[in-house]
Length: 288
Image 1: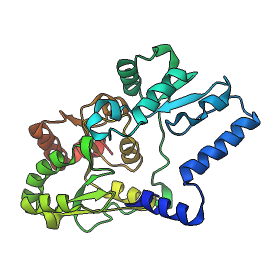
Image 2: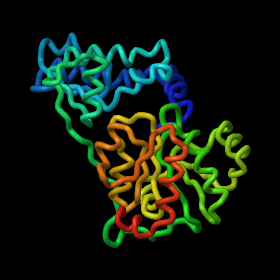
Image 3: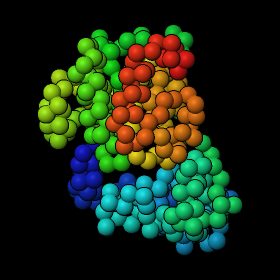
């Protein structure tokens, strides 16, 4: 579970109880298991090199999900060692798992990793609606387009919102629904200036609620400037939701010819893709 102030809360509880933070406790448990030696291959879950010395030469495998820190360093604090740790572990690892060929190519470009050391293993999604559990086609009273997940930085949300605002104003009954954190003050102000604050809602959802939102949406829109994979694409496909995607390597790799695409910074192309899907029921039927 993630929430605002989580780190500060853990710090406070750790000081009061004299217990280590969960990350430190997990590292200590891992080191105890490594010391026992009852394993053939170690697979860390984060780019923290705490285990390197304890391994004693035993092989380990690291999974790289994306290269966001390397491609968008402005989103990384100068004090954050994540990118340095990632590079170190990629150098030391016996094998590297990349979740897409796009991520593999980024690893080669930014870290100079030997291509023969990288194996591409796609992600999968357990989200879906089947049988009696299938939700109603319209879980909300009005028609809506869907934006799923984090809305910061490279997700290109404000660009997307500016384009979709024009469509919401013209399309009677159409709304924008966002999953994830409630709208920030900056986002609220932005939507108020565009006169669509009453047409936008955002809130955290459970997996069941998310599946219902996918199944009832006119479309999912993913305007990201970069992704290492694109899990919402699989989730939307599993729930029969059409998708409109920015034309970036990983998103096109995952969705293939089953989506509509637009250049990530082209308002005209995004607008055309949304309006095309809203106005063509036959096209929608082929994409669900």
